[in-house]
Length: 305
Image (tube, rainbow, N blue to C red; front, top):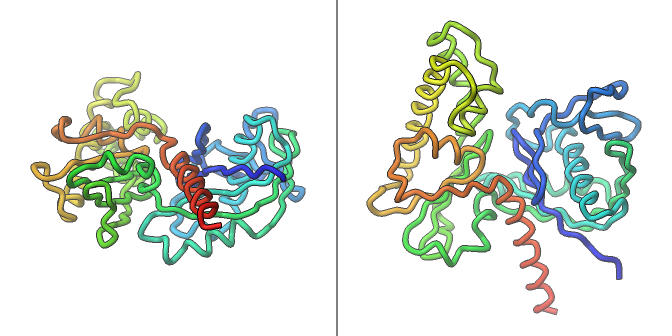
């Protein structure tokens, strides 16, 4: 019987993450391949440069072909690790938790539109049979394997590039009535900071510099620029905390957990009691969680049979 590989892909607005890889989620159609290009996907006679920028925020991921192309790039990364060019796969993917009901079926159909797909990535030819697509909830997937460890009252805040997903977990059980998706994210922070930074330092600061500071807490730049970025970042984290308090966060009663790319933004710049806050710093946590949930689904099916 042919082996089927379960591959988790976190289709972020800023980055695509698999269990082992991360790259920016930009797609640029090219007439030809330049020697300066990094990752190139060739599909149906067209060339696509991957990862030289990130994708603009797009609420509906099936609106264009970009996430389909990005899925091929992610598959190429994971299959190359396994020494494979031909494979049958089940894609384990995710959506913001609040959008699951409305968009889950459409996203699954979008990724399954070709039962078999042939493409090249950096001149290596891949042929992939898509056996199924399973769609899971962002944020929840990242903690699913360790749910039993979430004793007491917990709030999980998964801050990505475009959205923040908030989930309540009580004694290891997700509260099915309390989950939220908000337009808060690292890119939202960068967009808000652009004009304010220009007013503070009278210079346009490249977004990549800003993102490095948000991720690492610092950068090799002048002190006045670092100070201005830090001040703007702190202001943005206060907006996130206000939203969490609106949902019921109380530091005296609740354990707060941050994950996603925005976890580092909160760790470096938010005014928090760090003894009462947990930071999940593994950027691959959701992709790994999708694979875990997919394997659990497989085990349940075997037991039922």
